[in-house]
Image (cartoon, rainbow, N blue to C red; front, side, top):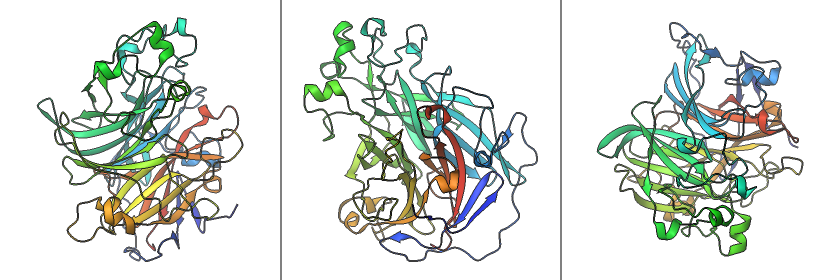
Amino acid sequence: MKFRHLTALCLGAMMTVTCFAAAGCDEGSGGGGGTPAPEEPSVAAVPEGYVAEGANAFSPEEEARMFDIPDAEYLYNYCPSIMQVSATERYIWYCTNLHDMVIDAIGYRHGVKYKGTWYWSPEEIALAPSEETLDLGTFDFDGVGNVEDDVPWDNGAWDRRHTCDPTVVKGKFNYKDKTYSYLMAYLGCYVADRDNEIGLAVAENPAGPWTRVEYAADPSEDENHVDGLVSARNPWTRRNRAFIRFDEQFEEYYQNDLERLNGKWGVGQPSMVSVDKAGKVLLFYTVNGGIGRVVADRWDLSDLEHPVLEKRETLVQRGITNYTNEYGTWACTNSDLAYDPVKDRFYMIGDGFPFLADEPSYIAAYSYLGFLRNTAGEGSVLGDCFFGEPALRACWNEVDFIDEYRTGYARNHNCGLVRDEYGWIPDPDTVEVGVTASTAGSDFGYTYRISRYALDVSKL
């Protein structure tokens, strides 16, 4: 493989990489660069119980880890949503597991910066699978497996199996006659490894508590939905539905009974960017996982009980390269996006291609980072570059790949950009990323940990 990284410097728990050129549609220079860095801001003291990044490292590769639990045998953390609210304060939401088992839930931590190092609070659970179903005595671990041992699905919760892959933005979102300041989109499912969908939750503060946004189900559509094995024994009707449903609105939806039996991945891995710092958001998400596609929506979510879809298109792929510098229809699925208001561009990080043949062959070995200049022009609404005629001119430009050379791990995936409260880049000269780094081989799942790296983009 080509060694892509031109300069790498270890700075405690963070890696900083200077990028001198971008491959893609253009190599124009943005703003930035040149002025000396000011003195590092710092909180007065580290709160009790907070732990420094890299504090539990046992190898150089682990020094970039944002947090960990030493000696935890059955633990995973992945898919971060990192929000910076000031130079010394951050929040993170991410996927973790409950009860040392493969039960995804959304974890939360608060971070402060003290004398150049980020410290993180102990983990809290922001959103777990629907509480009524979380009974370990009867929990349906394998999805459909042994039907006689499965949970009676009479509660109809669409996200009863997993909640994960969060993305959070600030704004003004009304739900049931109350205005909330924070909106979360997340992946949920009622059967493991298939039929993923996207839900919403709201909170007044980043720490929560989070309230699910529920949408009424249609009994004529949702009775015995998809999973014939369980439903044949326990006919049920959903009491609510997800916000973005995996149904006929997507061409990838089931076309026949055989497809239903085999299952499909669905929709998920959302990423939100605020359009107006109020109720309008761009929502990006993957359809059918792996080598699927990414969809771009623009929604008015000012009134969550009456959401308005303004625009929807498949995300432009033009300019995206794979790891060997080849151009093609690389979807860059499982992606996170952010807007840079200074350089007027969008950044995207997502799964890089090709996937490798060794196990796990469905987990990316490297993640693509690129940017797309806003081609919509003066007077446009934020995000117009992803829709209609402006999308025909839009093109991604490669910044770099996050790979084993940087992290020391064979798989590098489920990444998140460090963004401000609105999903915007806080520093035009530096792009920070949280990377899920893990091993290859049969026991890869419980090696998922989140590491943080910074890339100097001042010359791009």
